[in-house]
Length: 390
Ligand SMILES: *Cc1c(COP(=O)(O)O)cnc(C)c1O
Image 1: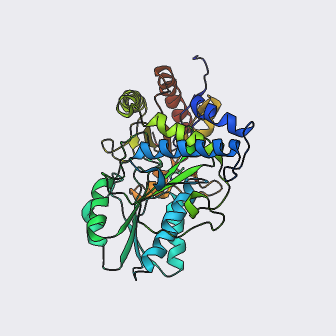
Image 2: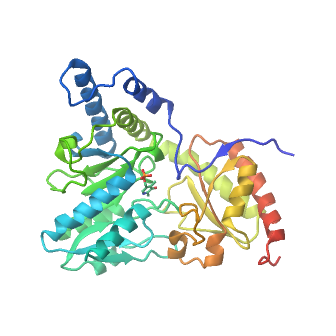
């Protein structure tokens, strides 16, 4: 019997806080508690610390520091860009929005809200690989289109959308373009200038900073209305006394992950390939969800016929392995993931899905362990399954 170990393989749900992000926070959690808007020296020190983090964040995506606005999370960044971006477009008489049908709910639900308020929203259908084409976008654009919001990398299946090409089309047509890049940063080189991105959302807790911090990049010149009206923080656009410690953690995390992207992805790809081979050669009737070529390396999403995702997770947990199923985000609901349905999976197959998201911090032993555990779990569940016919 193998030795039980703890394997965290749910990094697309959240990551641990890195030592460097943690250390960046510490002085401003306790010792320096000044309000950065005050004028004494410890306040100026706090303000300078925020400025440094803003520069680190800007450098990580090729932006200017004054184009970075810190928010409370990725969800807030998306809400701000989409709701206020739609209102900005509406002032020019444009009330059509284009997105995809497999966005995170932090994009889909703001779009649904806007529909209720009278905006028209087109949800471009992704294909069976979890991708869209630039032609699909071109065909959906009308004279009324004022905002396009399309994710860079999907959080469930890890597929990478052709964002630079999409953004170029929007630029040519004078349409505001936003991307939720929360799952892309650190895996793909992002340069908002070269890639023609007008607005871009990031979140701290997917990249080793704490939960409850995010940012929105807004290209200079775009007069995006405020989401939060308050004091003059964030150049008057986002009121609220700054969460200094977390802002510093986010700046540090962005600095860290914008280094060595290629090397890290190579290492992770080797681990992912080993994991996939191990699963495919030891378990029958497995389906890989989403393109394997246009995909961030750390994401593996597979469906096992005849079993329930939730049961897989419970048994994995008993072995010390943390992962996600295809319905993890909507706890209490039995609906399978909208992403897996969007790529055409039947309900029954979508229900038996597992997302394993690894990083370069995972090692070969983690992968060997997962490969040993999964076949045991699946065969046990299939033996009990009323719908599995071996
Ligand atoms: C996690 C995530 C979000 C939400 O970010 P929070 O900081 O948790 O609000 C939005 N979009 C994607 C793609 C995500 O992975």
